[in-house]
Image (tube, rainbow, N blue to C red; front, side, top):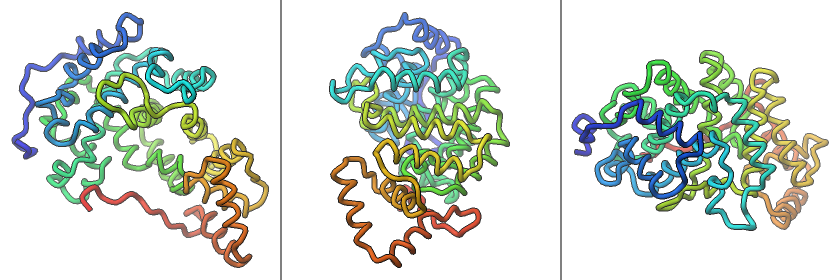
Length: 349
């Protein structure tokens, strides 16, 4: 039953109209947060069924819980339901209302609030995104499709028995979801957020996005936000455990930078994001060496002031020639100057 060609989730499965009615009830505020809403998502998207769904056989409860939290968070974002989004967050770390408003400005920019069919497609994608991290599943795909995002695209293309929710989307929405998945293959949002990629990565994303509808790029960014929202989810989570006061700032800076993808050069977007991030931590952004240290600090996930001071002390203790070599390496954009990008390894390695 764990063979792709033989796997099947026993039906009947919910239809499109039932899912759209559920989405409308969430948007209107009629559907409350709670265990029933989680159960509704499990029922409406059979990949999430706890015993016989795709996740149950190929991944783990952790992946399934994360998918549910991602989907719930996406619904609360689309419906502007701040209290539900933050309901389980610790008081001192709780997302601030002004941060929520910035996220709402982004959601309005995507246009998703007026398109329940887009929300349907987004929920479907978030339901299956974690399948790409399953070794049991990806080992059965061609080698060139075994990276997480490539695996998801391959499932959507050739293995509808594993992702049956894709089959009931309208043709327009299915094309949109396929485009979102292809964009995730081209660009890893988390790598941009941590300064692990380069301006070349943005140039490639711009080229790929230009080949798609504008809606696909906007929903690609929304899906990246939704995927982050569910990190750390546990059983029964109906809120976002990850997008709290401390973590959301970097996410917002990333989204705001990427909204300008077609308006600014790749270098401008990349370094304006990092400078914005650095200034929020009172770091200098005036010299090339400042920018190099900025990127290094971001790569190292340095946030606390004490850790930042220790990192800068180590940087300053290097010989001038060493700092110059590191500066040249860290500022290489991959477009005009050769750069090295270490992508995450295959899930099968």
